[in-house]
Amino acid sequence: MSDRTRLIKIGGFDHVEPVYIGGGRPPVIQTMWKDRLSAADLEGPAGKETLARIDRLKAMGCGLLRFAVPDLRAAEVLGKLASRVSLPLVADIHFDYRIALRCLDFPVAKIRINPGNIGGRDKVEAVLDKARAKGRPIRIGVNAGSLPQDLRLAVEQGKMDRHSALVEAAARELAIFRDFDFYDCLVSMKASGIADTIKANRLFTQGGFSLGKEGEVPLHVGVTEAGPLVAGAIRSTAAFLNLLTDAIGDTIRVSLSDTMENEVIAGREILGALSDLQGAAWQGGVKIVSCPRCGRNSFDTHGFTERWLSRLYSLRRDLTVAIMGCVVNGPGEARDADLGITGAGDKVLIFRHGAVIRTIRAEDADTVFSEELEKL
Image 1 (cartoon, rainbow, N blue to C red):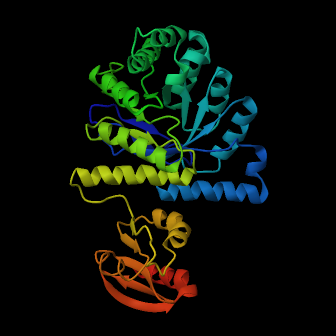
Image 2: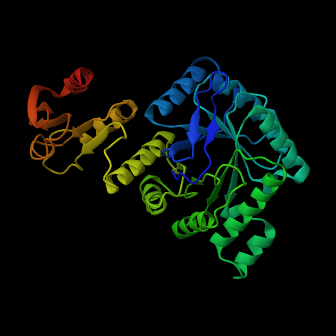
């Protein structure tokens, strides 16, 4: 979100909506499809569910959706999917430059490669030439687990810090892009350690890396293999807030051993926390306030919250919604909520700004809550 970085446009052609990264724009949230995409995923009921899920991710705040593309067959499938959705799709490619070339024949909005394992300079040049002709940006993705051999050995032998090796690897790849006059690129330097992630991105920013045209290279930040939901969200938050508070990072991905939806939610909440820390107005859509539940509970907050997460995070309005377990934590402690729900005995209470507006049966909770939400 630094205004030092070059503004990169992703999408904005054919039916694909444009997304802008860098140039002082708010960080864009992305996630990655968790399963291998097959032709069957685009057919019949499965195809409808694939498209519906992508629409839900987009509505929840996902700006870019990345897919692993391990072979040419997968490139064909991704190309067909890209022709059916407006959310910009990203092809993640390793080892075979021909896969990148094939993806560029379709409305795939961005390519992620690690030039160090994509082949020689001639193969990188072929990808860059076609990406330039098609107007598609490329992310240089450098991971701690796939450093060039000389840098990996230097780290193992204690001659170089891992974060310095990440930056050096990125700098080498940028030099190739500079040689071929390719400017629409982003860089990521990811490690599974929080400190290495922070240090690498800080060091890169201090270096002022630029391709000599319209600002520094935008950064995609993330802690790779961050872990399961709770651990991964905490580790990512620690890294992201350290960087984002200093305007380092233009797009984020919370890499969780969990669902894509939870990656997007975690990303939104991290950006919301950043907004709160900086004293800015909440601009993250719906803010959910929910109690942890205890022995006083008369309302299943966990079940209700789980059922409503996707729908609430899909609303494009700045609202506070409270989901509370009992009247102790209900209207009183959540009096600032635009809409709330809690339990009292065998009844459920719906309230607005601390005032109960409806008392209903538990089995009617979802229906009535939906009705009141529609009225806001």
